[in-house]
Image (cartoon, rainbow, N blue to C red; front, side, top):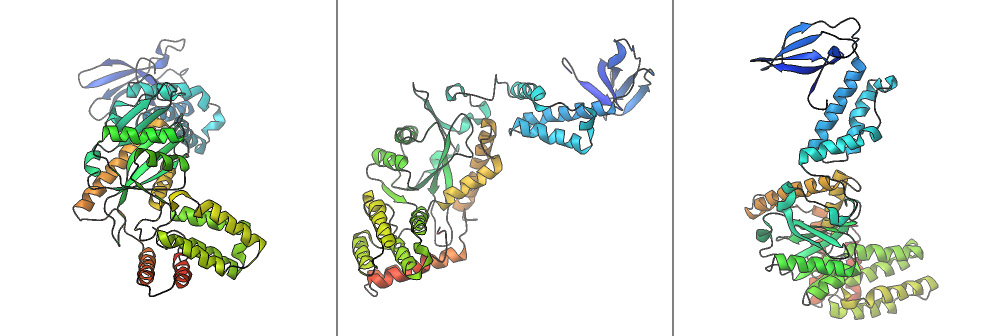
Amino acid sequence: RRGGKTLLRAGHKYIKRRENKNSSTWHCVNRRNSIKCSGYITIENTNNTIIKDYKHRDQCVPHFEDNEVQMAISECKKEVNSNYGSVQKIFEKHMGNLEDKRLHLTGNVPDYKKLKTVLYRHRNKSLNVPKTQFKNVEEIIILEEFNKYVLADYCNEDCNRIIIFSSTEVKEHIKCVTHYFGDGTFDGCPNPFEQVYVIHRDMGSTELSTNVAPLFYILLKNKEGKTYEKVFELIKQTLPEWRPSKFTFDYEIGVINAAANIFPDIKINGCNVHFQKNVIKKAKSLNLMEHEESSNHVKQCIGLAFLPKQDIEDGWLHIMENSFDDEAMTKFNDYFVTQWLEYPDLIWFCHNERHRTTNLAESWNGRVNKIIGKNPSLLLFLQTIGNDTCHFDIKQANFRLKISPINSRKRTSIEIDRQIQKLTKSYENKAISIGVFLINISKSIFRSEHLK
C-alpha cells in the first residue's frame, strides 16, 4: 500500500494502526469508508501470532481471490529487487501461479502493461538509481556494486561506447600468460549494445587438461575494426604489463586486422574447426562429399593445415597431381586457392599447435547464453559476469595450488592429439612422405568433429 504496509488475512486487508510495546494493532481498510468496519487484529511482534481478532461487520465481505492476487504482486515486487532477470518473465511466473489456481477467471489478475511501470519503479528504488533500462549507450549507468569489475569505460563523440569488465584480480591473472582467444556473441548481449566480446587466456594447458578461462568481458556497439583497435588500446593503457604474443580467433577480419595493427609482432592463428566447417560446406554445395574419391580430396586439403608452413605449397601440388578433372572439383580447387592458400600469413595452418580452435570460448558463450537468454537485461548481464569472474577466480586458485585443472580433456581428444604428434614427428624425420602424411592426418582429424 502506498505510504505503508498492508496485511492480508482471511480475505481481508488491514493497515497498521499503532505499534504497542510487544505487539502491533491493525485495522480493517474499510474502517474509514462507507462500510465503517470495526474489525481489527493485534499481532505479537516476536513470532507474528495473533493475540486478538475482532470480527468484521457483515457488510465487510472477505475477498480471498483479491488477496491472492495482491500477495502474488507483493512477491513479484520482492523478486524484481533480488532477481535481475526480465521483469516480464518474473511477472509471468507469479501470475502463472494464479492461473494454476484458476484465479484468472475471476478477472482480478492484472496484465503486464498495467504493472510494468510499477515493477520497474520498485526495482529502481531498491537499487537507488533513476532507471535500469536505457535506449542509448551514452545514458548507461553501471551500478556501484558492479563498478569493481569495470576495467575501462570509453565513449567518443559518435557515442561508440565500449565497456570492458574483468576480475578484480586481473593483474595477477595476466602474469606469465601469452596466448589469448577471442570470440563474440550477439544473443547474450544486453540492449542497447550489439555484441559481447570475450577474451580468454591460457594459464598453462597440458596434454591432459585445457586450462583456458575468460579474462575480459567487453560490451560493444558494433564490430568494426576501429572499435576492436580501441578495445586493445584501452586494455594496454589500463594494464601496461599486458603483452600477448599469440591470439586465436575465428576468421572475423575486423578483429584480426585490429590485433595485427596494435600488436605488430603478435602471432595470429585461425580456428581449425571454423576452417574445416567452411571447407566442408563448400564441398557439400558441390556434392563432393558424396563420393569417396572427391571426399578424400577435400579431407586432404583440410589436412594441409597440419603441415609445416613451408611445406603447404608442396602438399597442395601433391594433392593436385592426384586430383581428377571435373567441373565441381575445379570450382572447389579454385575456391580453396582463393579463400585459403592466398589468405594472408596462412593463419589457418596449425602445425604443432596445442590449441587449434576457439571451442572453449564458444562453449562459454553457449553456457552463458543458456543462463541469461537472448538480449538479457543489463542488470542480469552484470550479475552473471560478476558471478563468472568469482567462479573462475576460484578455479584459477585451485589450478595454481594444483588442486584441480580448469577443464579436463576428453580421452578421444588426447588420443587424436597423440596420433597427430606421432604423424608429425614421422613426417619431420622423413619417415613418411607428404602424401602418406596427408592421407593419415585426414583420417585422424575426421575421427572427431571438434578438436580441442
